[in-house]
Length: 87
Image (cartoon, rainbow, N blue to C red; front, side, top):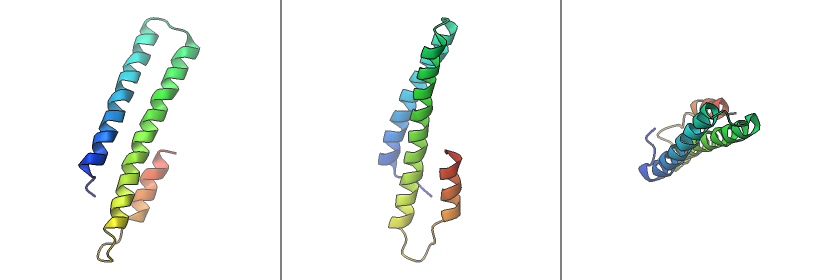
């Protein structure tokens, strides 16, 4: 399954923001910041990664449905496995 580059550009941007947030978490830990603040920021990173994963899977599902002319059967089990891996 080849993913739409335009859609993946948005996902890449989301992942870059998450990368920055994660670097912030590391700095917070190194600076000895309050545990509650660290956990809150870490939770935000986790949500950002989940959203990126769901966006990738949703794009794949849209592609499978759009290309579903009967010649190729979408690998529903594979998509379901990827989706559930984020749950």
